[in-house]
Image 1: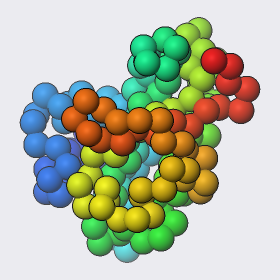
Image 2 (image 1 turned 90 degrees about the vertical axis):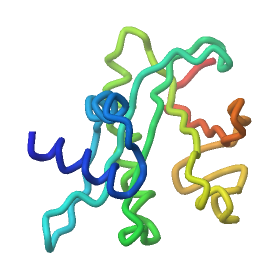
Image 3 (image 1 turned 90 degrees about the horizontal axis):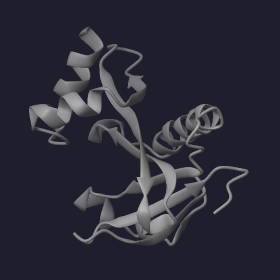
Image 4 (image 1 turned 180 degrees about the vertical axis):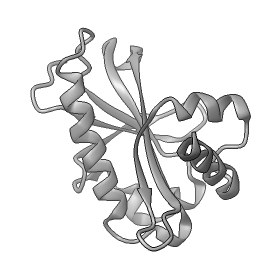
Length: 150
């Protein structure tokens, strides 16, 4: 319970999530947690939830989210957290009866959306591809598992 409380506090403090219902929901989706080696405080987290995506041929994907505190947003940490999460999701996905074929993410952070590096069509570091926008204008990216079939 202590770790869950810390993650919830992180989201609230950093303005990532505020609504209690959403926080509770997201806490059940936590995959990996990053802790500061000096203080032990939670500074990052990845979450995922399996969803059937109608616009992607009704295939199942994991919706991936990643949050790292501003002070720990250093080059490569987001890539490492993403890669670890993707590898884990691919391993559990291969055992899933719904056979998820990949991962999608929606970039919601307004600050990040303005940076040129995040506006590239392909994110080669984590093998993600731009596929369109949500109805609210947020970019959607997809990563396919090795043996994915559409």
